[in-house]
Length: 101
Image 1 (tube, rainbow, N blue to C red):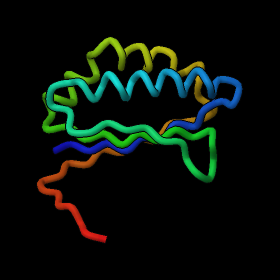
Image 2 (cartoon, rainbow, N blue to C red):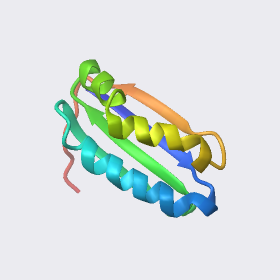
Image 3 (spheres, rainbow, N blue to C red):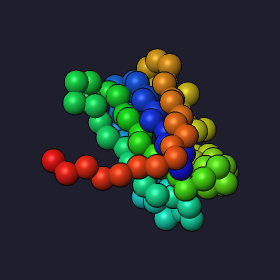
Image 4 (cartoon, rainbow, N blue to C red):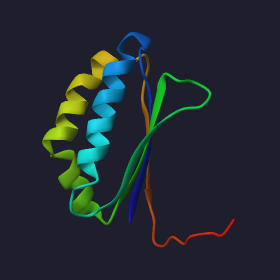
């Protein structure tokens, strides 16, 4: 499994557009083959930071995602939306288990 965590600092003037694009990206990404889960959230300490948490079955699913129209549309608009450098971290995961709280 491939897991990505991405953090995007968004220019407050473009926040509404960024949230709309992120919402569309999440909805459409979750329909992709090989996608385990794709989520976006607004940071609790900074409402102008959008965080993505992505889980893919494998490299092929990740590569397919980066070639989709909805991902390309988001990536194309991103330079105009950002207020700083995004941070993206990729994890290669061999296993995962649910924990009881």
